[in-house]
Image 1: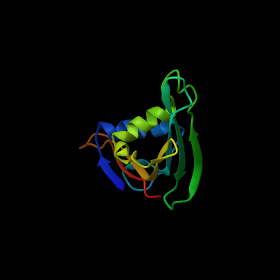
Image 2 (image 1 turned 90 degrees about the horizontal axis):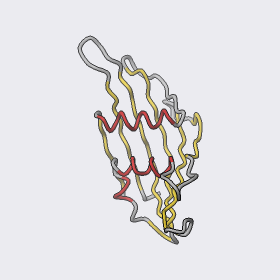
Image 3 (image 1 turned 90 degrees about the vertical axis):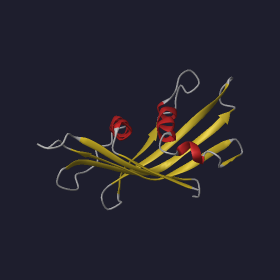
Length: 145
């Protein structure tokens, strides 16, 4: 199953800001596009056993790519303190749930659920004399891989 979503509203801005908070810088591709961040990766969710209260733990691996699909940098999103408070990986998974991730969590086995981030592409367009600045994102997630 594959989930595909696009947005150019507050959800796109939040996703763009989250990616920047992980240290992603992106690249410039076109006139008016100040910055594009493109990535792929995976999310693994482990049920229960890691915490006394059955809290899930999250592992998010991301690979930032350039305009040609070449790897710029890889990221392992911090999943420490997941039992005491939401980790960065859990918060990122929650954000992806709004982009269709929650529809893919049915792919589970041996206490793990996972899905692939086939592509996330977010672009920030600067303000002009006739339009305000805007962020636009497309997200493709899958549990087929």
